[in-house]
Image (cartoon, rainbow, N blue to C red; front, side, top):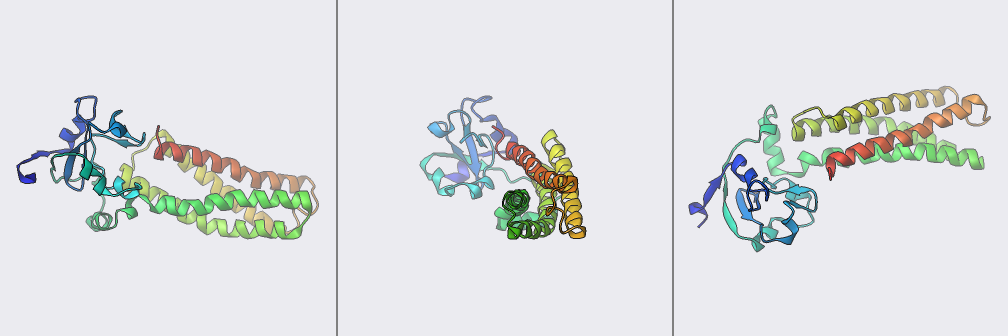
Amino acid sequence: MASEMKEFSREELAKHNGKDQPTVYVGCEGKVYDVSGSKLWKTGSHMKRHPSGANLTEEIGGAPHGPEVFDRVPQVGTLKPEKDPMDEGVPDFLLALFEKIPMLRRHPHPMTVHFPLVFNLLVPFFNVLYVLTGYAPFEKTAFHMLILNVPAMLVGMSTGPLTWWVNYGAKMSANVRIKLRVSCLLFILVLVALFWRVLNPDVLVNMGPAGWTYLALSCSFAVLVGILGWFGAKMTFPH
């Protein structure tokens, strides 16, 4: 019975990662399972993303299956209730909310950041189309996208630090440092482009030096978005 099973602390569970110990264990919803016999866990991680020897209660919410998948493997113990070190400093009401709605812990930033990413790609796309075709609605669409991009970036840039604080303990890393700097640079360039376009609506009509500079400025959005996407993916999919 579960009451007679071994109770694992976070540190004890971490040893069963297929390396420090030959056994491969994972925790989920207060229970510990032996997945040593599963070919999907034979390397000590699942889908090159989910590590063994860890509590996967929160990560299971983002998987294409539920915790019922562990019904196929033996339960070998229970998890000792303890606070995650990363939760230090996080208000109890937020922790209670995350426990009730797990998706709110990791999903706010991925959910909101897609909007500014798309806007930052569409602004140069429609500007280039206008330069190639001379079709005025393309340039007008780029301008509208530029306007919408400002509030979208503000939301995305606010959920980013929130997710970093809640899930990574606000610990600085090279990836985080690059993302913070590039995000701020991108936002400044977006504001410059927006004010430039408002003050000079015909900047792309006559393609002089100012027009080409404005076009290059908007095209830099796509380059910076690519950098942000690359380092964001390295944090989400480190392998």
